[in-house]
Image (cartoon, helix red, strand yellow):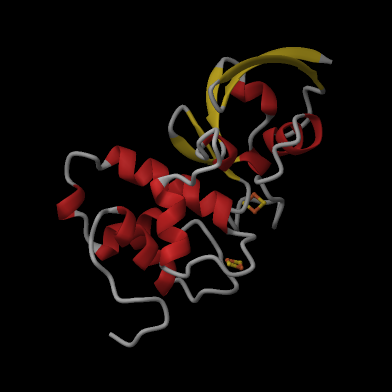
Length: 166
Ligand code: FES
Ligand code: FES
């Protein structure tokens, strides 16, 4: 066992882990951070996505020891203490981009990083940029259009309603 320190969703924590375990296993099995989903387990689906120092990262492919000393963010940390959803989460709900929800926490974190990285040029962001930034995520339910619309909503743009024809 080895000791690591994480800054997880605003809290400093120290814990003992098996050096062979993935960050996904540490988050879910040791810390109860269950928004982080195990889908493919091989870096293909994005369901396990978290932000490490602001960078979207597949936690299934990341050893927990590699995150030692780093800032790890999951969707649990985006909800305000009184339970209010973040602007990105609200945009996903409003756009109808949440169906079964399995892919949603990982996508929300990618969108959050995308907005933070483009905060000085939100009005210039193109649909192609949105799609490229979210290309690492598989969603079996929404057909992706509503996810793109959710990101546009989060950017502050008006979009057509969920299920409405263009
Ligand atoms: S579970 Fe990590 S990318 Fe699919
Ligand atoms: S909402 Fe079901 S997989 Fe995306």
